[in-house]
Length: 283
Image (tube, rainbow, N blue to C red; front, side):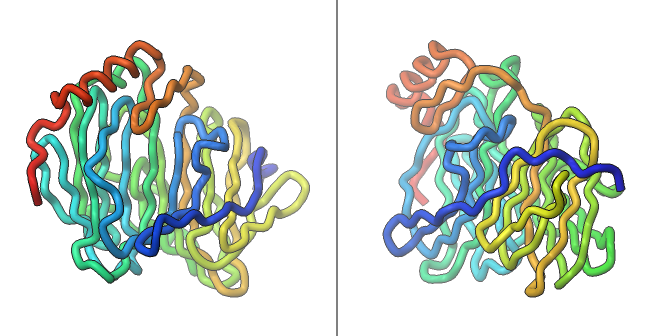
């Protein structure tokens, strides 16, 4: 292969708990992930969060296959849908949406990823909408020996996700058997991340191989070269994301993130007035 893609970060990340029903580990906005805002790998067994607003970006919930219950999604557009293990709900919050998500069966495990993806400035205040996909609608293949790939968003190895949104980002769920390797081509203009979901492994670097432990995070930059992953002795599951960085300001307030401070203030006012709640009703 060519020289591997340059890595700016290889680290282990902490797990944060909220009571006994929810834990998550992620970058928590402390790491530059542009065009991503945040990635949380979460475990939830009961209701934790009240209905809450978002505006200016996409809020993505993907459930891993080992979840033992479904997730209920409910939002101010009137959606009431169930996210199956291996399924996806992609909320393009745009000008503003209120939603909540919770496990269908209290006490059973919802194990997944919540990913916040920035929207280009030209569309970050467009009307909100949601996209819902079953596991069967997200293409899966074995691009290398001992490797299973699900294309959650974007495309890879001739597979294309049904997700259609302005940021055109790539998100993959990768499961590697012990010692298995995968070389992932990435467009030169894209940067992104790899996070360990389960197990451990390594990621190729210019100086050798960076270790991805059980809570590993690696961030790769724009440039030439592929991203090469290798599973450790226990095998590994990785979450991979890549996208074209926006390099625009990101003004954040609670669940709002837009490229203009005044637009954030307007979104907050829109929510506080009750106008954003729309069709959100009691479960």
